Image (cartoon, rainbow, N blue to C red; front, side, top):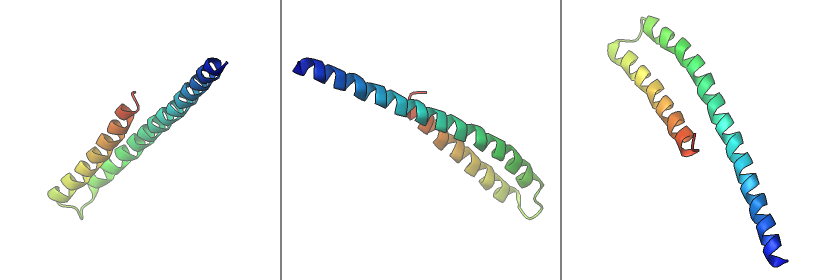
Length: 80
């Protein structure tokens, strides 16, 4: 009986863990999609901004790439 309870508890824990992971994966994918939509618009804005010199524009684009890298790293850590 004790073995059955432990087995059922193990299955429940694994099921809950997989649900949580699926939800997290979906959230990261959604974040990634939304980021890309914003990044496209922001890249155009940066390119057209007359107040930014070439270095400042490059810094802004590096910031976007850094955010992409962070999101990608998070997605990989979730096993996607």
